[in-house]
Length: 176
View 1 (cartoon, one colour):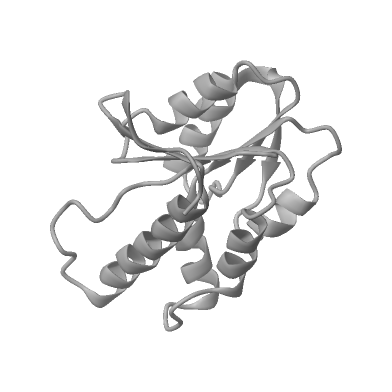
View 2: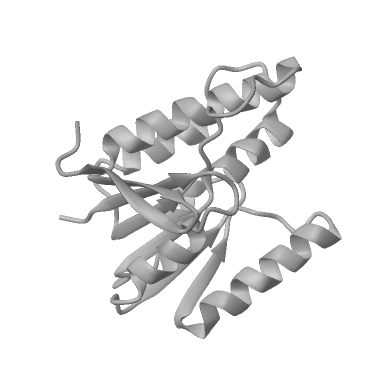
């Protein structure tokens, strides 16, 4: 049975690096990137991430349909890294608005976590440990991301929280 590992933590806490470390022992590796190169800063970040992971990963760029990307993985994929869920939620809000409590794409993704096509390593940001955002849009983003993180963590067999590049085991066992 394929496994789901969720890596969470603050921005720049070492989550993506740790995802690469975990996947190092696998054969056929896929990297599913949710970020879009909409400005120079993001283009530089994307370029740096591609350079860091090198040519041993097949890259799939999918900013909206994660479930579709997972269903379309090539046969024989051993592991897929999804980086990251919080960028993905931002993409969904940007495209479809912020009025709904959940997006169908999220429900489709969560359903696939019950029987993933290969081992998954999912990266997300923990947004609920700071100050309460001062505007409704930011609060909505925080709430949607937090809800997605809780549901993904419940579906995952393993959850790690990264602080200063150090992984702390939050959950290491069966799904709830």
